Length: 148
Image 1 (cartoon, rainbow, N blue to C red):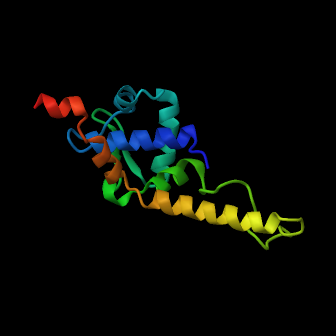
Image 2 (image 1 turned 45 degrees about the horizontal axis):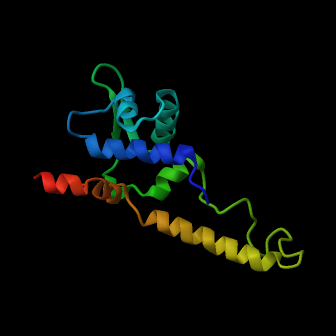
Image 3 (image 1 turned 135 degrees about the horizontal axis):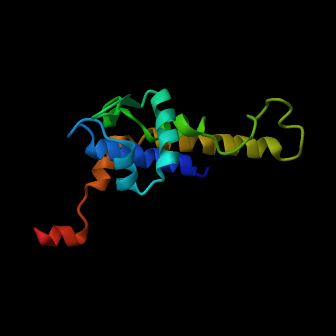
């Protein structure tokens, strides 16, 4: 599985909201774009998808912007990826023993393995929350530790 650009951008946008949200209210798309280096027009589309998935809420008008819909500890990386990319799979393979999948030599054995690898990827992404990523991003770099 390759995390798409859309999945990466969605994860980075939500990380920005988790790092800066709640301090001064909603965060604008422009602020997120400036902090993350993401292109604003594409970011707007991604935030709409994340809103549709119930991961962010928006407020219109002056002082408007986006906030996380739930606590970062309740949002997994798998949810973020699914919100913008759909189901997490290793590829476009059918499940073993479905739709004649095993009609060709070796195909069923490999489909069983690909299916298991896909499950492992989903489980791994389900195991990381946005709060975990926030904690990893707040670890000071070696130069910052010496400065204090």
